[in-house]
Image (tube, rainbow, N blue to C red):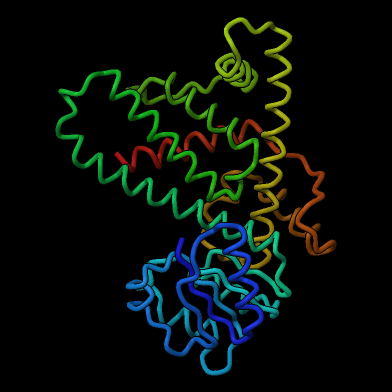
Length: 312
């Protein structure tokens, strides 16, 4: 990945550059002490993937700079600032930034956020490549063997699921792999021509995916042990997603992702309750609220299926 760092504090620029180098995240192509001079076309010519930019800079601040380069700049933006004003944070998200990191910078948080953005870039590129490939392949579909076609669809559905996991804020969670396995199993077993989808019981989904994951000689005890472990991993991932959207809602209630996904995957009362908890504790973790696993899995499948069909 190629980075550009804009911050009026030379020490911060040095710290960020060192983190990127030490963690082998990519290359810092250039840096600046102010937003003045940053132009979308020059950033694009330098093939900048990620712009790390400070909010408060002397001549042209981060908000003004992002507004200036938006929407021509093709990369992703991560904003870093000491300011915690919700109005400014909301405006930054409205302009399309990926994350808002508070100073003083924390190495673990910086690395985690950058890796999440890198994963999103890779997923978007993968989906774009798939769309481009399908436009060339679809006219030849009648001569493609059934096995090859099924394999291509399976990989495409997985990419759609991975993109959705990124949108839900859980692409790095262990339970995300279990959700992908369930998604692929459902996609392979549902009739392509059926207008009415008979969604199987949740327990059956866990058992079937556990059997597929384990060796054919696995005992019933081993299967049920994997089922229980998968249930726990998925529940943790769902709680993480709930925290993700509650945090997003606190920052910007009108954020498009919050509006689109939060009410679909969760009951509004649960999201609202988690937002209240986070306001009191200022902590993204510790939620003991109930989550509806079946609803989450069902919506995950239907949303991924809709995304997959949109790529076809």
